[in-house]
Structure formats: structure tokens, C-alpha cells
Image (cartoon, rainbow, N blue to C red):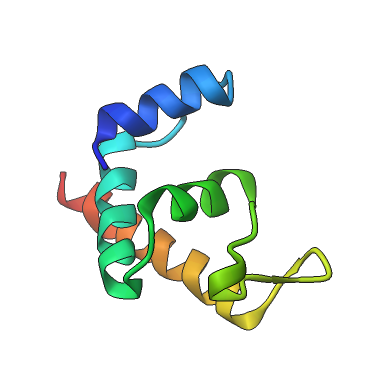
Length: 86
């Protein structure tokens, strides 16, 4: 996943203006996808839209599970690491 893809998704699909560094976000999502051996797009949707990932059991009755919250927190950690390095 590239920063341009993230930016395009936010601008065109979500019809919003990106408020964060799209490149750092793309790196974080790519790292997490490799770590979990899961699709990058699903992780992007989880983080930006709070869309559940059934295979990773991120939600239960519409709320985050411990696993879902852990994935989101780890994505945020990766994001801030990349953002501070740039």
C-alpha cells in the first residue's frame, strides 16, 4: 500500500481531507498486514471506518474486542514511529 493510495481513498471514497501523514499511515498498515498475514485494505478500513474484520475477531456486538483494540493500538504505534522518523 502506498501513501498515494491512502490519500486517494480518504479524498475520493471517504470524501474527506487527510489530516495525518498518508505515507506514514501506509507504512504502518503494510507492516501490520505483514505481521498479521492479512489484507492491507481490511486494516485500512478497520482504522479509518471502524469496519469489522471477522477473520481477526475485531468486533463483538458492534464493539471492539481486546484483539481489535490491540490491532488498532499497534497500528497507531507504527504510525507515530514512522511519522516521527520523517
